[in-house]
Amino acid sequence: NLLYVALTNLDACVYQVTYSAKLLTTAVFSYFILGRTFSISQQTGLGLLMVGVALVQVSQVGEMRKPTGEHPLVGLAAVGTACVTSGFASVYFEFWLKKAQDFWVKQGQVFFF
Image (cartoon, rainbow, N blue to C red; front, side, top):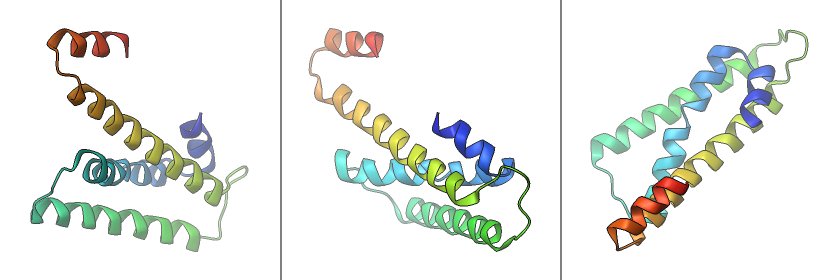
């Protein structure tokens, strides 16, 4: 599991802040797949989130102290991959739910997935 790999290679607080980038990846996939638009305040919030995640990562890479078994770049790659796959899966599922026209087809999709 990518999240387990990330948590074993990053500090818990760095992991939590970095995994919040899932909101950003979900927003990007929503824009491209669903054609959703965002207001200026939503875009500003996403930009501030991106800056916050970047600052936490820069501070993590800048620290030379590494506890035993921690590899920050491996943890960062695992969190990044988990964010992208989770964001894509949620938007893709929403796309298929919105694509179905019949109410009972939608209910069946929700039930089986």
